[in-house]
Amino acid sequence: MANLMISTLCNQDCPYCFTADYRNLYPLSNRHFLSLADVENRLNFLMRSNIDQARLMGGEPTLHPQFVELVACVRMAGLKVVVFSNGLIPASVLDCLASLPVSECMVLINVSDPQYIHQNISTQQLDTIQRLGTRAMLGFNIYRPDFQLDFLLPIVAETGCRPSIRLGIAHPCLSASNQYIHPNQYVAVGAKIARFARLAASAGVTIEFDCGFVRCMFSEPDWEALCTLKADVGRRCNPILDIDIEGRVMHCYPLAGLGSLPMTADSDAPALRQAFELRVQPYRRAGIFPECSCCSFKAAGECSGGCLSATIRRFRRAPSASLVVPRQGIQQ
Amino acid sequence: MATLSDDKTIVYLCAPDIEWVRDKDQTILVDKRGQSWSLEGIEAAAWDWLVLGYSYKDMVRFMRVAFENQTPDVAMILSHWHDVGILQAAGDDRVG
Image (cartoon, rainbow over all chains, first blue to last red; front, side, top):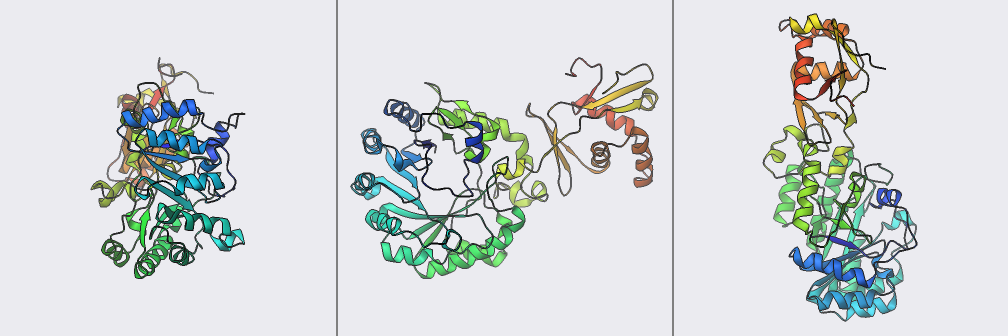
């Protein structure tokens, strides 16, 4: 997979936004949108990487003024359309997405926790989800330990969207300038997720997981319950590849601080992933907890040790001070 | 500022870009060239004292107290770290 940024602009200001470091490193220029000329380059990249879907993101991707034309290019290339949106979608874009075959289009609509934005999910978002039907899937990013999820189930029931909810944990950017869940809070978060998964299952709704979850955040009974519910807990952490409008390829937005690689005319996703993996490989010995490096789940490949950005944040720079040692001591 | 090693002393510095983390059973060191090291037991203790800024003399004294029966040789540990690239000696070509 690889995500294509097509808009640097967003019409929301989520406190957990993973692009915080990216925006600091690469301040906005006058160019806010991927040009249609560059779309062809991106699609060629996806096709030579054997990727069958164009995952469009931003900012808010649907703010792209030529979104409809862009989607036409994607469809012409024979790729599925996946959109990561906040649901505040312009009418013309909504018409376009709603006209696509259900099997060829998925719009992940991230909604916010109503208790912190002091408003319920907006009428526009509800209308959008309803209009998209099973093309739409709800997403929710957990960035505070006192989150609530129950409000999502009535939305699924009332709008007729896909009976599945994608949960993400907000991870820190390397600078930690965004809001995120600290690993020390994972166990409490895991218990709430497991409770919700059972509730959702009773309503016929399944739970999907984004990256960076860890096995030990769930108690044994909760883990067994999640397995019974066939929940695919996202214990992975690998270079998804986020590609910005300038053609810079990043491991992922939280790790934008590690630098980027250029998308060249012949580069493909596997080669870029391998280059990023080489760069981060030493850090993979550790994990988000001090116990990760000796954890049997991690050793067996059943857990990645959590988000690499959170892991790297645990590392400290070695001191620059010198140590004077008598040569006599060494020769002994 | 580090002084250069001379006939009687050798001055060690951490290699550039070394980062480290203390885990449950080990201390992990990494650098930007993709190398990593795992320090356990006596070596992990020595590393802790090194990053806390203690002198060689203090490290030797602490080792004698903490590892009474093993009498670890701090100088040999440091020399080994120099050999594997964790430390550099002032005056080494590599020190930059």
